[in-house]
Length: 382
Image (cartoon, rainbow, N blue to C red; front, top):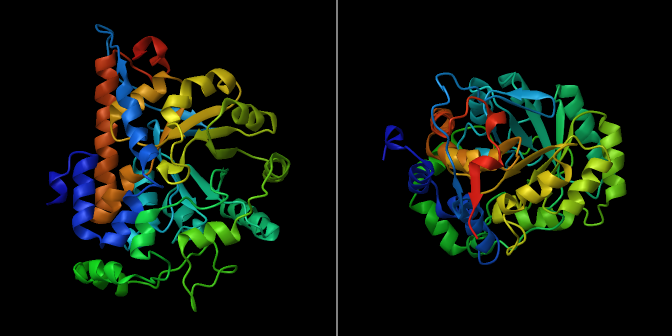
């Protein structure tokens, strides 16, 4: 399968599966427990219908939105994700460049494999730094100071990962950083030698945001152990409020799912929230962000920017979220599978396909701007 034959999410996913060893593909593709929430995230979009208008004069369409004081050329952004250079040697460099080309926001994770400073140099567009709340309070403060020094304007604290989800696919293969694989996992790597050659002939894998605090050499770090041992489950609203004050700029909480928590986020001075269940990778059985969207927009949409992610595979999914009041929509697997399939050219192709789908969808909906998408354009099925 060639890149030019990829026309949607599923095509990129198939191409990534052909190229990645099984344990790495499963790390991207998998969810927690029985993966009920993972499947529900996309299915939720199918439980409602768009109601288009016609004869509205849609020769020109403006897809731009403003979130956290930053203008995006289109209402989707590349959500921060971990370990990207495992999927393709370009990693975050490819995503930063592609997002910059399309004038949209991207994020670097504290588990990112390229430094946030380098990513900032690659793209002059909007950038967020996503981090977790560590037991080491000094590490938390250092991360914020480093982001400020790098010129990052917005911080994104993930609040739904105080402990790792039960990701059974990873347990079966022994997925860890560095690799400590089971026999079944090693066999999967053996049948994909091209990936191994690529991995071994490029710069050494590292986690630049954590290199002063976390030593990879001399022992495996499973993703589950990182969440269990380094992150602080005692994180509270009081401590987060202190971080918001310390940052003194756009601050976003990622992983909000209840209206009560959304109100608390607004009260402590957050600029934005991302409704998210971590792509179905944490609490299985959780509602989808899309299903919670209208309730939370009604609660706080007049005070803070409400965004969402999870299960987005089509431009029409984005239109539905915007119609319910989301300011922008985050993409995760939607760009990770293209990254794995073909690096920067594939990420650019995926973003171009999404741009085309959103523009086409807005024209067919009779809307010339995102602001014209309202609940009048959508019907939820009973």
